[in-house]
Amino acid sequence: MKNKKSEFQTLIKIMEKLRGKNGCPWDKKQTHKTILPYLLEETYELIEAFNKNKKEDITEELGDLLLQVVFHCQIAKENGKFDIYDVIKKLNQKLVQRHPHVFADKKGLKKDWHVRIFWEKEKKNEKNRSSILDGVPYALPSLLRARRLISKAKSAGFSWNENKSILKKINEEFLEVKEAIKNKKALKEEIGDLLFIIAALAYYNKIDPEDALHKTNDKFIKRFKKIEKKLYAGMSEKEMLKLWEKTKI
Image (cartoon, rainbow, N blue to C red; front, side):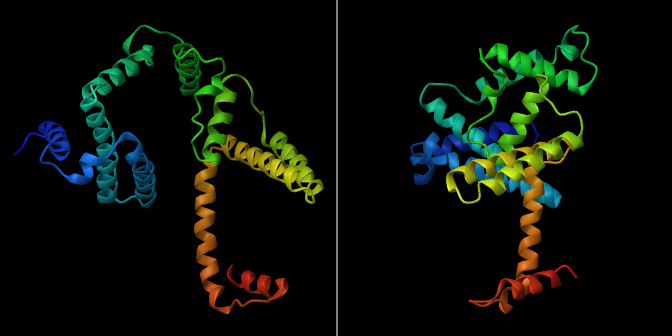
């Protein structure tokens, strides 16, 4: 039986061959930039596999995501920058450094929130950031980015104490949306403010707003398909809503 540990070495050799002289024309042509879209695509496919909770799909999608890491490392190696082992070495060092309560004699990190606060402070110092919010990637989907910003702000002491306070803020933002309804530029800003505070409500109730909206999208699709063939151009709003209400039954 083949040693499981040797499978990783086999993966590295396969990637080298694919990019080699007699390798695959498509693989040889790729750059960091051209394969970046696949990194996002594979990430979302993995999330979908986890949501479906199918072992075979999860295993396959984790492999596809690992391939993206190995692919980038092979390109970097060919350019004389770094290889997969440099990446692993740096990761090992970071894991040990970020867990002094496990690998050293750091006291006072007994709760998960203690650890989160410690991590945020360490990352800010390590990367010489002027703000704890600087580490949130700009390219994240907006709802996910909002959640990360809210989480990081909380670790620095900016937080709501109860749902009542957040709901009050939601009501305030909703009124501002109503007031701005005739001003497109102002409306865009106010809708953004409302979405952000709703994301905060989700976060403080341990709900992923991205996941919540994803499930609502699925629910909308399911309900819409029930009435799709009955819709027609010029249908009144009243007729449409009457059909829509029946989809709840």
